[in-house]
Length: 336
Image (tube, rainbow, N blue to C red; front, side):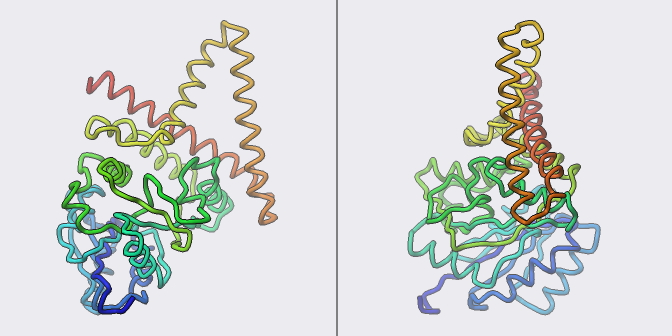
């Protein structure tokens, strides 16, 4: 496509206290092969206290494409909406501060968006550890495993362009927000999932492309993995008080599994037949974890990843499920 035919693109990056990552993120867009005069980069900072905003200000002084906006409410959907409302691009591309995009990322997104007419396009997330520790590497592998993330194709990869229910971050037509509205600011988490489901229900088209890739630096401790997974699971269910079904079926699988463990575990104490069924399912689950963990450790020849990967799977699944269970209990007994 000729340069004069290319649309203007706005990149929006919500951030808070990302002093160790924001430069890497910004640099990945600055070296983009997309025409400079057709780009703007909006950093929406959630009142950072670690000097993140000072770094962004220095970039703003050197590159007038970069714009800094303050997000006094601190939560992500507010940041995203502030960026959209300030944008001037025909296409809006979102990124996380913990992400690094290849130089052709924007070009590929725009090319595919125009050729397919899709409302939102995205690529495959290559998950890398924030810390190159044994646990950090194992967690990054777990988050790229089908057993770890289920049907999240943007994490496990696709072999051809595939219509999906969501993509990470996403490159949207600007008119999508005029048509279906902005991110739901009552959702502290999962606001992108809810927006994409709303887009799909309105007849929109979301496509994941195998030749679009970017790097995401994942949490590298069990504590951080638990906290993030618990929050994601909680907002899958809790978000239903603010939106009409803000999740897909695959998002409630961990909740169903944790509920099974609790309910059938209690019943099995008194009912022998249920006990046999219960122990069979638990044994099967553990066997699958062992096989997947062995696969993670064998591929790079790193047998020290086996136990951390096994633990990572359990933390991911149980934390997400318990978060959803808490969301359901609050939904029923607190919010009615």
